Image 1 (cartoon, rainbow, N blue to C red):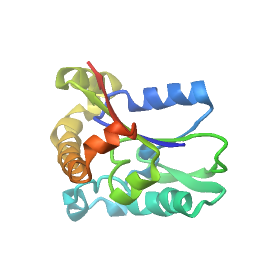
Image 2 (image 1 turned 30 degrees about the vertical axis):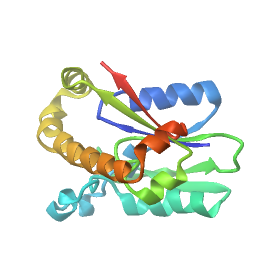
Image 3 (image 1 turned 45 degrees about the vertical axis):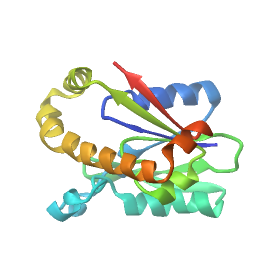
Image 4 (image 1 turned 90 degrees about the vertical axis):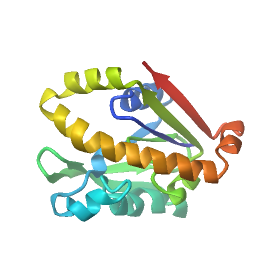
Length: 184
């Protein structure tokens, strides 16, 4: 099973995915490993809905191999703090024996990606709790979150739910393929 966990920053996506992985033996892929490389961080790119992630690399290294039924997924984590790729290659088995959880904002970015997922979970959080968590996580980046990243996420979520509604969100919910979780 391939499970996507998307949602607001600081809503508990990583904690939820890691807990699920610990309980089930699933492997977690973090969208944070697909941050934009420095040369990709342009005004044009940031103006794209969902453009705040290296979606080309994610699709090439994760989504396409899943669609093609490749037995392994291989990628290098990108560290946004150093601006470099990790030396170690991440190798994930895709034999169907273990679930794969893909977590992080933008993991439901395209219809092609969503069609790969067996289940999609959207994590929400109220604004006050979100700001509290973001400040505790990294007070130096709080202003960047508030002024840049959260507005980009908002545009993405609006587009995502417009697209999901157009593609029959209620039917996805009825079939158990999509659900929302709220953290307060």
